[in-house]
View 1 (cartoon, rainbow, N blue to C red):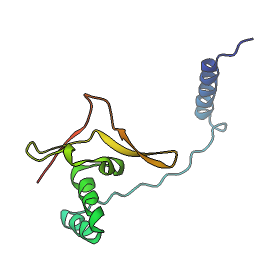
View 2: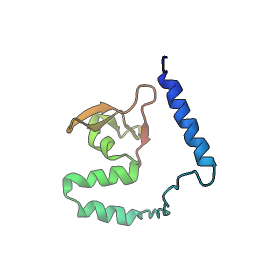
View 3: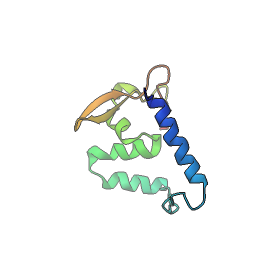
Length: 119
């Protein structure tokens, strides 16, 4: 008898869903507490950037002001910033591969994010 991996996956998934729906047979999910998100004021962001070592201050501003994630900020190069057009092109990021930082594309064209630059 040949066993198809897709059929097996479907059988396990459907069984788990049936068990989840039946009282007494279902497993209990852990309680999740609500996460409180507190946004920093512009003054707090500037104070945080000022408190950072000078080489890291820009990373704080890129994250808070432009919404760049850590890897995107680390992968940003000067030629990706168009001050005249007011655009930051986020087409690469630093990712860790086999415990080493590597520069990688964020997404294929034409889906490369272009972030407005507010000066």
